[in-house]
Amino acid sequence: MELITTIDSDIKEAMLARDAARLRGLRSIKAALLLAKTEEGASGTISPETELKVLQKLAKQRKESAEIYREQQRPDLEQTETEELEVIESYLPKQMDPAELEAEIKKIIESSGAASMKDMGRVMGQASKQFAGRADGKTVSETVKRLLS
Image (cartoon, rainbow, N blue to C red; front, side, top):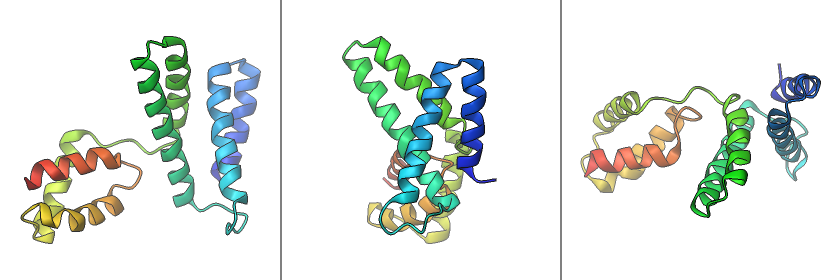
C-alpha cells in the first residue's frame, strides 16, 4: 500500500481519537508527500525511495527546530516539534544502534581498502547506499571520520 494512503487512513483515526499532536504530524507528512508528488519533473507518483527521503527531511527539520527551541528556552515549541518528530519517525525504518553501525562501517572500510581520511568519500558513498533510511547521515559521517583517523 502506498504511504499516502496509509497516512490518509491514519489521519482519519487521529481525527476520531481527537489526537491533535498526531494529527499535526500526519498532516505535515501528507503535505510534504503531495508537494513531492506534484513538483516539477515528478510523474504524479512517488517512489518508495522518494517517500523515504521526504520523511528523513521532515525528521531532520523537526530535530533541528526542537534543538533551536531548547537553546532559546521555548519548551512549548520544543514539545510541539518533538511530538511531530515522534509521529514522523514512526513511518521511518528502525534506526541502527551505534554498535551495529560501527561494525558495518568497519566491514565497508575493510572491503574498500580505505586507509586514511582521503578515502572517506569512497566509504561514505557505499555507506550511504547501504544504510539509507536506517542511519542518519551525520552519524555515519562522524563514525567514518573516527574510524579512519
